Image 1: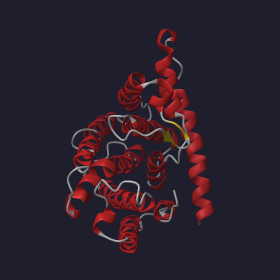
Image 2: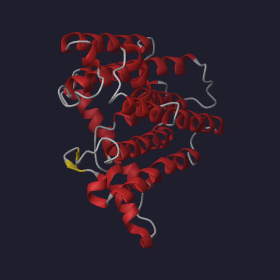
Image 3: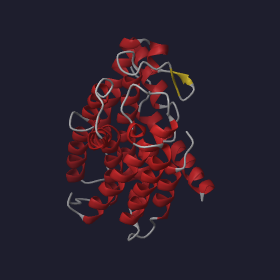
Image 4: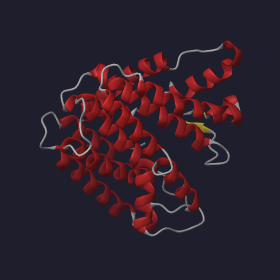
Length: 285
C-alpha cells in the first residue's frame, strides 16, 4: 500500500510541477528577479499533498483531470505563498526549506515578500480562467479560497500561532488555531476536487459535506504528526505535546484518520484517499 500511494504522490507531483511551470512562466525582463523568486519556490518540489487531494476527490466523483488541474494549482500557489511568508525573519525566521535555502536567503526579504504576494494574487487568476468548469463553481471557489486563506482561515490561524508563542492555549483553542492555520486550506483542496467533478454543485451537497469532514480530520491529524516529528524544536509554542504525550498524541491522530476514512468509505473509488490518510499518519518527515 505504501509503495502504491508513494508512487501516485510522485506521479501527481510531477504533473502539478509541469502545470505550475506553465502558469508561472518567465515574465517581464525588467523585473526578472521577481519571476525567478516566484519560480524558485513554486517549482521547489515537495509532496504536493493539497493538489493531490483536489485531483483525487475529482477522480472519486468522476471528474476530469483537465478540470481539476487549475483548482489544484491555485491551492498550491496559495500554499507556497504561505511558506515563503512563514520563513521570513519577522515570522519563523527559517534558513532552509526542503534542504534548500529559503526564498529570502536567496532573493532578499523584500523580493520574497513580493513573491508571496504574487503567488497569492495569481492563484485567483488561475481559478477565474478555468475553462473546464462552470461559472457558478468558479465564483464559489474564489469565495472559498479567499475566506479559507484569509483572516477567517489560514492568516487568522497564523496570527493565533504568533500569539501562542507567549500565551499557552488550552486544547480547544489549539485545535481551533490549527483548524484555521492548516485545516482550512486542506479542506479547500478537498472541496475543490468536488467542484472540479460536478458543475454547479451546491455547497450543501452531501459530497462537499463529506469532503469538508475528511479534510478537517486529516488536517488536524497532519498537524499532530507534525508536532510529534518536531518534538523539542518549538518548546516556546503551544503544541499538541503540551497537552498529551507522544503515545496519546499518535492515538488521537489515528482516531482522526479513521474518522476521515469513515466519511468517504460510502463512495466508490475511495481507496486512494484512505491510503493517503494512513500514509500521512505514519510519515516520518
